[in-house]
Length: 192
Image (cartoon, rainbow, N blue to C red; front, top):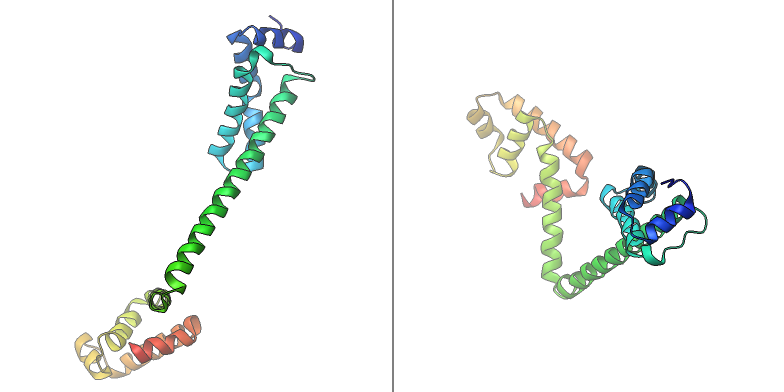
């Protein structure tokens, strides 16, 4: 059969001819997938959009009418499926955002203690990330001083290094952390 002829192809599809459907599938699938990928930017969602177009074509095969070409019909179908996918994602995102807002306002705003805990954990995380970014020996000396509460002489004795080295490393640590953390460093030093 000459499936390049739209009339013959549509008639074959109307009759449920699986070979006609395979022809349409093999002929357009890759191009349709590329098209959907450019719209959605998501391989799985793109594949779903294309497969839905083929599914609907086969599901409606008995009453299927194609005015221009199978290609145009499928591109329009994939385009509509992509728009539906985008709308669906936006709806889900909006719902998730509303749920987060509701959780925030019902839990955090109504209980100031929760707000303070949240802020403190975020500050601690920022501080620890910055401290972890310090060079090895510098970080070790800083932690011994500010977390373990050792004096510079005790650190020097414990690590077997000079007092000047401890002081130099603490100066480097504080300069780097001040640059990265700003006012948060003062909290760490004050409360640490």
